[in-house]
Image (cartoon, rainbow, N blue to C red; front, side, top):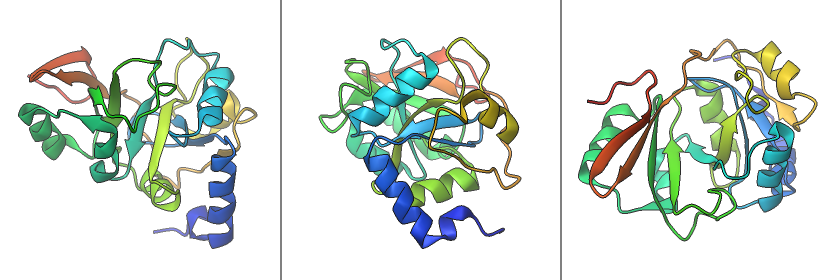
Length: 200
């Protein structure tokens, strides 16, 4: 694999300091490009809402390179949802669960649920491996009511001046189709947005 910026230990240290101070980063995933910050950093979350001009009633989701890092943020995982995670994580599926006390209200717009996802993209994986906690509070890289960025040049154009870093995709491009979103509460799986993954 081509050497990435995350191989630079000095940069990784700088990145973590910036994120702890409320920094926002932009990156490729397997679906579309995203922007993210540390989930426990209220300033970072506020910065995301401001840079996108995003409605505060719309929550962010949590993403990581491994589901193990996301599980502490949720509770009451139904068996059928566990089966979906085993089948489709990493991949283009966002599952919404009851949130745990670890998930801040400012991430979820004071809702009692939170969405989690594990993207299947090597660059995103390296990013998560490099940051403390390995989890990002995230949403798509675009201004509200505009299409999400689908490549590096669009990411720079849409949000480059509004975030701290836009990371290259190193030729690991996104597929351009949003993830399937499903609510997994009380043993029911309800598809809220149909994406690449079809859930029967």
